[in-house]
Length: 283
Image 1 (cartoon, one colour):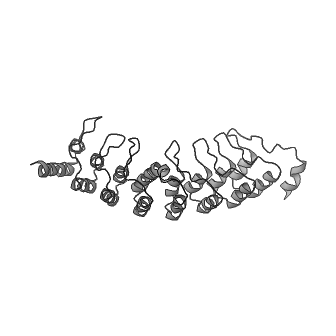
Image 2 (spheres, helix red, strand yellow):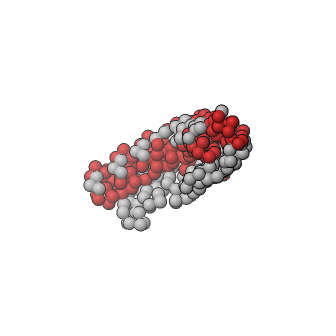
Image 3 (cartoon, helix red, strand yellow):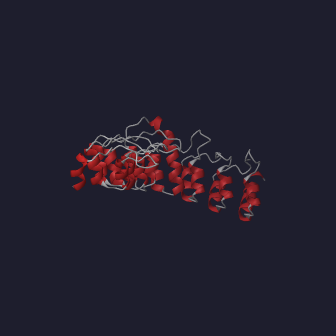
């Protein structure tokens, strides 16, 4: 109250930059979760959409701290909901990333964008929602009316993320919303590779049952069988062999097969499995 009483008489530029990061007083208030100071600054003319040198607005910082009062005040004063910072992250993404579900719900209620377009880091509101391990939030993002063809790449990346984390319920949820098990982009790791990298054999078998390309190459040129061999994931190797994986496939970059990788790693139990499978198939 004292601060509010003195503000009209003080010669203060509320929008001046106060440090090297380009913070204004409003940004500092949001960053520290000081909702009373933030409200007073807004009342006396603080620029609601001001941003720091990294492109973060006060709403970005309110999303990080999870202070609902700050969020309410900023929305009341008309702050832009969907501003991207320098890493192409919105306030909604940050709220999801830091697990502030109430803030995320409030932003969604007020119309925060759930556009499926991925940023430069293959991130979107959906990929951040997956980090919450809260399928109710994931459902909220997926409920947005977006042409399915516009969401395919996002769903594919998200499926890989869920496969790596080992969350079967989320994998099934994404598939029910049309996530493809395969996608023609060699720069994106397939969900099958991701499941192997996460040591999630149950999801490996599930994706194979859904028709995942058993011989797809990851960005490093390894098939799922090669990747499972490199990681000494015996159960995944067994599942892939039984599903018909190409044992003789070569990595074009280094000329290695699953067998040579097993021998190099001294994973002799896998070497034996591969030799036995070769004998069964070709002899």
